[in-house]
Image (cartoon, rainbow, N blue to C red; front, side, top):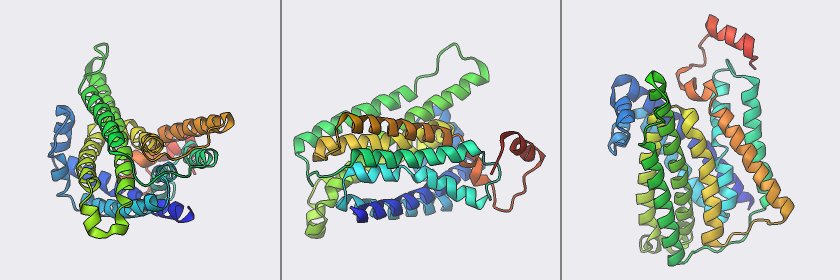
Length: 328
């Protein structure tokens, strides 16, 4: 169990680095062309990933994502989904801390540090209250088919909802901003659901690693993993390109572990502590985690930190904002 925790933390560091690099690549693409803005206006473009792949920074992020995947697969081999995926949710805290270190905490408000602490505390309280354990290495084909149909239906519904314009009561530029925020939020939730399903498929795949390459490629899970992973990457690219990070990040961070936990219980029979006190603590922990994610994803360091260099001096407006809001 300890090994699974350590591998999960290593995976979180890799995915945090991947997130920073990929968002920086998307920012460079947006600055160099109109592809990203046009995609946000059209709503969906399967070729967006290929245009992003021309950015060296985005490719570096992809490489870190692969390393993070290896650590995640190893963690899932030694531990249950309900343990591994909540730990991976601290990726956002690592991104925040990493950017805070690089910028020497310039412009970081104390509320944002509290949000980061709340996220970490929420994960810790949930794992302590749930005490995830047990589970079987495989799930039946019928269970997988049912889970796959439900996940595809949910993701398809979210993607369709992302194409619906906001209420007609919103007019002018505000309507365009609302549309981008709404689209990013729906794509973010769809991405989180997709990653939760992908993690469950990884869990199934890791149970065949001891059989060698022959056992791995003879099993359906490796092919579903490739397809589901590629589809979820497309969703993630659209979520980041469609609108503000504050709209998409909560879906990324919250839905992934929640869906993974549900699939872990349904598919693999993993056990969570189910006393009334434990369930109440788990719900409270998830609410704290959600509140922390929502607050932290609105941090200027997260949304604009990629453009800030460690040696950048704050201008007069920055200083005034820091004076009014209180920074570290």
